[in-house]
Length: 522
Image (cartoon, rainbow, N blue to C red; front, side, top):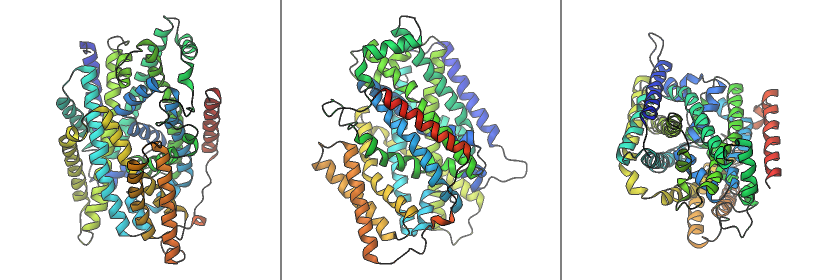
């Protein structure tokens, strides 16, 4: 695949426009020095539309677009459960978690753990997240993003990684979260336009030019098995999506851990100008999650009929991009770059926040560290993280299939324990620091044991078992200590969990739409 001159012009215009807009929104008023709150939390001034768009932009990257389209090709619409259950998780997090986070006035999720448990838990989770973000998330987005650029545009991977890292730094290193969040609005808009273009043209191709509705109808008739939302136990991809337990089992552990406690996701809500704005932004993101499968999964199902003999399912999206005319191809390619760069910027900003606030400042709290120095440390942390990720990406992630499995398995070792720590910390007043540390250890030990000896059990089910064992261990340790209510316990009676009429109506609409989807394609 080669980019035409018009396509290159569109991509160049996107890159220049992105950096220009980021520079403009990042400017401080004359005489104002950018402090840590400005840099890491956008001065706690983000409106709902920036929060919602930024949540989606941080979440969607090349491996998700390419991977979910490939899953649509191989599995079908069932993979949309990852998107649609996320919408419900977002609404619950907005109602019950975010009010507590904002009242605690925190910068990071590890900081919350210190306020609820103790310093040990904060430092342990800070180092864990730094390791995951640098050696798993950042490396995977860089590597798979560069691989996507190589497939689509023929650019060598090393230059692709340098381009992505350089573009990310160009607009986020100076401006911090404010630059990331406000440019994410553009990123999401381009992503949606590009995705719609691929969907429309692939469906039109199926109908021989008769239009989108005719193409979708043909798709339903010609490949009905691709629209089964709940996979039977004899389905060849049952291990990936184990039937009804997708709706009642381990997938919820992944959703709540990712959307509720993941720094580069929650940081947007922590930067909201108010609780109401944070909740409106989360509801907006939930609606966008409903829409995403139709621009990343449907093209994969269409590709199953249009190019049925692909050797690797993840080539489905690049194949569908071939349908795009010059100019629109460049816009869609820019949408892929937008997804990659926004995720990179979100991750590096969160790495800099955790390192600066949870490691550096908490270590040197006895010193009078200036705001200017904190911002400088944050920028250096972002730069170093990207350099390290580029250096280790190829050795760690040798090929695409191994890379995806590496991401899922590694994070899945810790996810059950993290969910236990936060759920107990938020909603059980007796939970102790020792029980939190125990949950983390038990999660890793049993997840590894299950991986070695229960490899015939679906990954999501293994994660559910690890969660139950971690919770049981945390409860046992807490009861053994017989300490009563923890002195740092959160008293839920102190919080008002009521939400606005708009949030309630939005939540009901999301639930009704989801119910309609699952009833239609059960």
